[in-house]
Image (cartoon, rainbow, N blue to C red; front, side):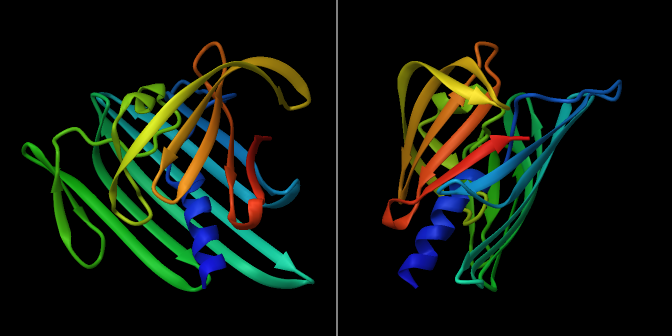
Amino acid sequence: MGRIQAFCWSFFAVSILVLPVTTSASATNSQSWDFSVLLDGDKIGYHRFELTDTGDERRVTSEAKFDVRVFFINAFRYRHENTEIWSDGCLRKIDARTQANGKKRAVSGTQVQDEFIVDDGSEKNALSDCVMTFAYWDPDFLQQPKLLNSQSGEYIDVEVEPLGSEPITVRGEEVAASAYRLTAEKMQLKLWYSTENEWLALESVAKGGRIIRYELT
């Protein structure tokens, strides 16, 4: 069970929502991204994102699917779907569904006057009037002291450390990037952004030192 929980937390870190980077935009102001998810260099699934601007609101949806096999046996199965509504840089509504090795979890939340009410399936909590999830597509999230975990519904403390400029390979080409280390309860992430503040990649360390990596496709 400890190994499964470690996988859940590591995958949570990268599946809790949102996106950015090399994009395809249309006249309807929508963008989409596709990431391959690798574990120690082997592809185990994908994570897709779509962002749509409609007037003063921004709708972000994501879908993740991971399958980890050990000796041809499916040792870990993860599914995650999430829809968020944003306005003025703040989360206004969330509806997330997660399955990790058959265990289901649902998180919902909505803005009510000057509070954001989160329902994690067992209790409701009132948060501040401007909550952010791990919104990788918006670099402003790196300035936040607390972020909402869309998988568990927890509002957790985070610390972000700038690591300076680093080269990174994106779709076979080396590009300049700014790196950051994000630390929170039970997880540590490394993130890369382009000079235009677009999200380029992510790495997380799972139990046993195994590396989970997101790569653009």
